[in-house]
Length: 201
Length: 358
Image (cartoon, rainbow over all chains, first blue to last red; front, top):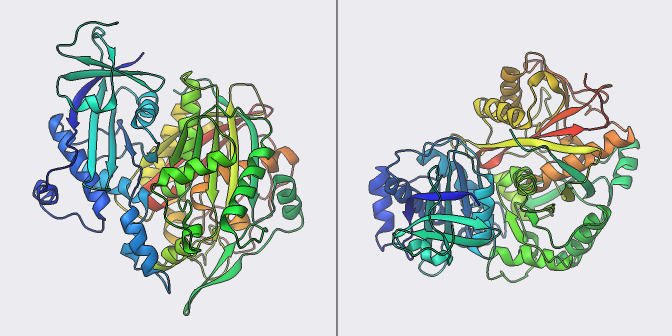
């Protein structure tokens, strides 16, 4: 089992009420030509990088964004707009899930491998990303606009040192800052806590 | 470098040329098909390539086409992962009055249900590169031993919204696709349902590796520097050099900007460009399905010894390249790339294990 160190994390669910203002402050501007779903992704990804003490995402790192709804709200608006003619270009752009990647690339100053996908449970998307990531690790996110919204992100790096003690755990447990490492066998998540008792290595 | 390789165990395709690959090859031999104009708004009319299957029931048509494309692949392990690669997903159904589903994944699961699929279901949405990104993921999952096989299903069916959106962005050609032509003026969209089954059992076509690079500088187009980085990374991942490549299947959709950026990026990698090919003039740009659809069609053409006719349009002298009039006589490695919308740049290296190096 490949073991990953959690180098950075942003797991606020839901995000703080003033997340949009905080994103604009962080960037020095409101991001242009992107919709709310992309803004939410940017907010969490930047918070996660800040937590990892990284000013940019290395180009060799994999970026994997998982979503169940994507820019659904923007899609509904653009479809209504296009019912009797052409949609506005900005409306069409914000309705396309793939547009989150160039926005992340621009604001994370990253030119690497990235993708947007959906899976019913969060762990299979993480499993896939962990299989594909190399020595520079990965930035994995789960972003949805539904209800209060959520933008959960992990910055993971391969653990070069001795294997920590791991135990089966739930995805939601990753919010706990005491969880320091993770590994996956299939879609089963194994976690290491700084104070967890040994179950198996 | 990537692992030793994943083999193409089966392929199926419904596109404008026909409802399956044998019929597509017959259509190519007879001169192919032309796109048909679609009225999007009172003052907006653009051509598009349609699958020759008329049915007002969007879901019934989609289900039939998906089942047929997967059946054409031959036996597949339905407990394996399935990757649905699509830009527009079920937008055509929504336009026809179908209710919005609770989430995007539900449609991917519905498609899996049409196939009695039991394995994990992923929907990959990276715009035009979706199928290539999905193929890379499937290849790596198999290589890591996390799956024995996987199915990539590219799905792009007619809808007003995609055409209208690309039209609003002024990215569509009002006439026909003119890849690498002096007078090229944009994309012509097309429908496709393409299924590619990957696995470990040795077969003629081996996926050696690939690369996917995102560029944030232009959310609607390609960048020559990223084309160069992508191609170099794809070759390195596949353990081959530029001199080993015998054929490049280009994106070359007829976009004035992207075609030029693609060729400039490749010229930085290849001292002398190998044979070039594109299938956009034959089936249109099938967006998220294009990577799978073009690989299915290209490998079928090579297997059958049927090379697509060249588009009848004068080449752009500024690009100083031309498409190969016939299949390279000695062919082993193909670099197949898809670029464009969403800053996506993705390429695969395919090996003809029956071929000989040039």
